[in-house]
Length: 121
Ligand SMILES: [Zn+2]
Ligand SMILES: [Zn+2]
Image 1 (cartoon, protein in one colour):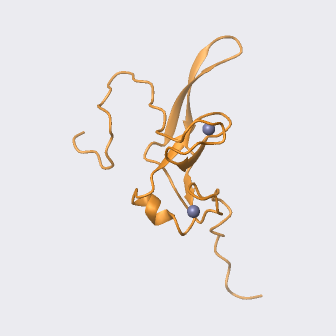
Image 2: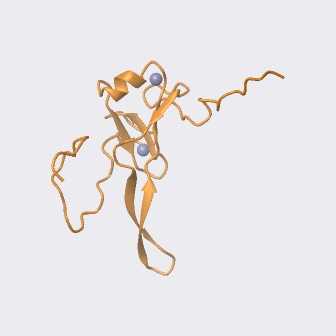
């Protein structure tokens, strides 16, 4: 037995590359961590749930381009998909990959186009 303990495998947890479908090697999170959904329970009650947005997985070839937004990726929120892919391309359900669904506006809505590091709080 060697003294070295293998580090946690870096593969296992990544999905297929959002761009080309090759095995993903890196994953990162969208800047919106949850999708707010309204779900109707069996008894008719409407509850709001926060569904986590799945991480964006990419292969080594594409991750820099995706991160730098030279290759924009989009999301399909159809039940059959809930996955990332090349923005504008057709997802398996037929709808194009696009923006994450907007959270239902409540008290304070703030303009569109949220920037990464918000200025002004
Ligand atoms: Zn790729
Ligand atoms: Zn779809």
